[in-house]
Image (tube, rainbow, N blue to C red; front, side):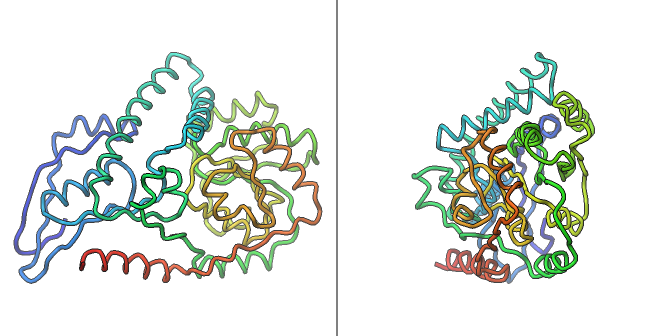
Length: 358
């Protein structure tokens, strides 16, 4: 809310969220009051959604419609997927996740049904809303590629809209200087169905049959206690109870140190725009084995130290991981990304200024 001299107000019911808890809260929340107040000599030109979620896009759209503002959205991830095969692979990953996290079949099917219904509704609404936005910006070429050909001329890609910050670059250099040897394997990312954690654990079981048993898999990132319990039970069933360590949240420096000490980063993600963790790993001279999805293919496919396998092919993921671990002389190429964060911000603001002043 902006507080100045004159104001306009309207009541607006927020759309359904994917999170059930948030959704129920939204249903119980009658309406949200949005007030835009402006000084006498100041004029708003546009409203911008900084995310591709339905809540963010729908709210920005409604504000723009109510106050006659141009509407802009910045997509951080693809809001939907045109390719049927990609949708199928993502759905398979979600089914595998639900099977492990919700072992009760009735509860599992109820959750799946409800979330799938909400997601289909969200994506249908997002498509309609995006077609009525005035400017759509994406942080990577992978986003319009995933959305489908009809969006190629509607979406402007920053290509990429992500860079290694000066602070991270300095931290990486310090960590590289003090790191001696690589003695572990790491999986990074959010613990969720689309990030492929379950597939990574299954691949790890296969990997251990062929490599030094002293290696441990470290999984970073916050995990809800109930889900962590299920993942630990799953690891026990795989015979991995003493071969996997869930670190929980760790500081940035410790996380980068874990990557630097890793012989390999397994990255079985199904959804991405420009994987920053892969950029970090390659700068830390840690090779990566990942699924061949557009975000990885566009920005990392031809680099030494990056191996891409067919999406959802867990056996191939494990085999290429074994080959990488056993190779004593893996050359890891640092990505040649010439953009800085300042360059990206200048590019983004230039796009917006040109748009609102034309």
